[in-house]
View 1 (cartoon, rainbow, N blue to C red):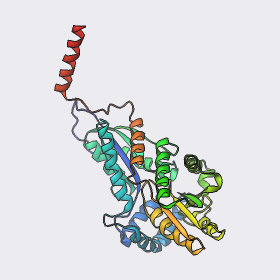
View 2 (view 1 turned 90 degrees about the horizontal axis):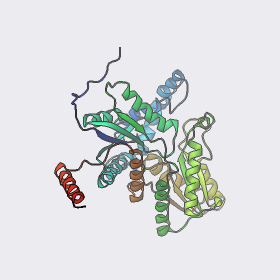
View 3 (view 1 turned 180 degrees about the vertical axis):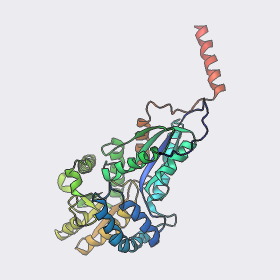
View 4 (view 1 turned 60 degrees about the vertical axis):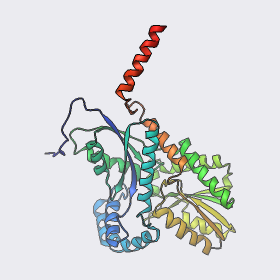
Length: 364
């Protein structure tokens, strides 16, 4: 028998509210090996992330990976941790606050919260909080511009899992993708151009996206195509020819073939071919995190310079960039269409306005 969560007392005539849930991947609670192991265990147990028969993968994960990987990963997290905590969580929190302000300034009466797919604060906890605050409509917004079953669909799985435990469900909407959104592309282009104003132009711009197994492309995942469309639109906005930029994929796990070309081998090959300066940007990440700050700005930089390159520039993620917040706000606002999110006018002011209108009509 299904056991549903207790519902808050129902009140007839209660003003319905709208919530926006901005969701990112997640992060360990700290750089301790125990916290990293806990995070990796949750992340790598997701069948959307690793599509290997469960029993075989359970033996690999618990018998090998979670015994040796957490300590190495903890050291990597320690290299990019800030006094405020995890960069990904810090930036996601700041983006949420800025999005709330952007929507409020445009008279949208909504509550914006953020959640993490893995770790804290969970999607279920934050939807519960929105519901407790009276939200009867919730828009779920992924921090991932490009759709992938490994990320976006997994996020939706968590929402559906929450819904299976709830008696009185809110209306739910989801943003699947925004890889070709004009505001998002503009924000990326402006962040790159700002870097170039300071440092000049590189010989090559490398656009590095998070990798996924090549098998996912063969099975119909649109991620690969959406990454390349983002890159093409961004290159067009920057007026780059095809020989001035490269699209690569990073963050491989295991021995299976992943989407290619791989980022670090590409950086090494460029240096060995005589390219002296590269700039690297990560369009698929909207917040700086382990994969951008450690894997690219530390490991990627080292690989390029050791292979003979002389100048390496990592261009930060969009983070709290104003053009990005504007793009995110416009995106959310468009998906709220049809829901009554405009702030309710003050009753006295509304009555005065109506009386003025009636008086004006009488004069005519």
